[in-house]
Amino acid sequence: MAKHMTFVAAAKHSTQDLREAKRAWSARLLMAGAAPRGVATALTRRVGAHAVALTTASARRHQNVVGVGIAEKRVDGRPTGVMAVKFYVKTKYPKASVGSGAALPKHIDGLPTDVEEAGTFRAFRRTGRRAAASDATMPDPRARMRPALPGSSVGFRIAGDQFVMGGTFGAVVRTSAQVYILSNNHVLADENRLPVHSPIFQPGLLDNGVIGTDQIAELTRFRKLWANKYNQIDAAIAKPLNRNLVGRDVLHIGAPNGTVDAAIDMVVHKFGRTTSYTVGRIVSIDTDVNVEYETATFSFANQIIVVGDQGEFSDSGDSGSLILQRGTNAAVALLFGGGPNHTIANHLSKVLRSLRVRI
Image (cartoon, rainbow, N blue to C red; front, side, top):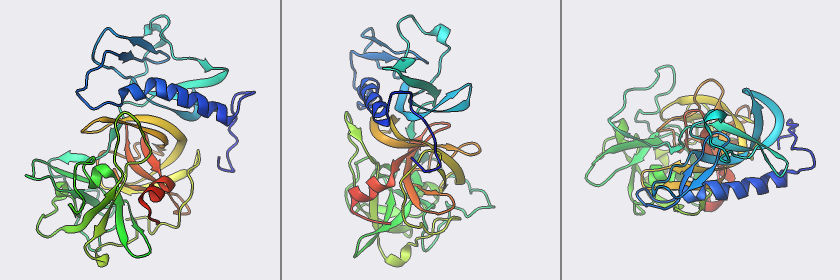
């Protein structure tokens, strides 16, 4: 925990107790939902606020719980200072509407629990029609820029150009011999589907990138997304065609100042392709989630949850944004998805280690 935090676990229980309870309930509630779309199962899960009921009545799975983590318990929207096992649900139903015997536990072996409505968690890549210009008071992340800078629009090309897409250039990372663009697998590698050396464009084709002139990099390496087991990261790197085509400074924020581990209540900021500059607060550093992608619902373990300081922290198209600690500009996390009020991000230390690069 950050030194300024004084959260307490339930009496006679440790942080390790919370982690063990979280892992057990995550496996019970989330992993059954991590199957490719269209795969039928005899197990249907119906989960309401404070409710869990298993049934075999339908081959369609309904999964209301989208995350299980460790976060501060809130009562009537107010913080309590007590850490709890947190159930994130699509819809929080009134207790009266939950059938007998279907309730999520109020306690787990004496540990407190909490339920928070989060909507559906989705990967934050944006596809569709070409987008309008962004807020003129900020740098335009959808504009063509050379050198291309973190926070700006990037993306791949689908053969046949059936659709156009855009995500966010997160950071410049490096080895001893080479620099790379860092973003998500689903922004640079199309959810495992693109071959290495596929072209990467800035701006993305959704944002009026031109195929003939706006390629800046080639897909180099990505970590595969796996269905039916926990993932840790959604990340990929692309090698610029020329080092001079990219710069280190995040739009409106500046260059990252090293890295730092995430901590609960850490104030962070980011600049992304869709919502530009936003500020938020980390509310969990250890949450397991199910996230809907185009190809499957993927499960992720031990993720960071951020909530916006004023309104949303991110939206579709912000995938790949680098999240930094406000005040120090130390890099903390790599944004990849979320819901209406919650942003989900990978621990940056795991991203860098897995891809064998550094900031």
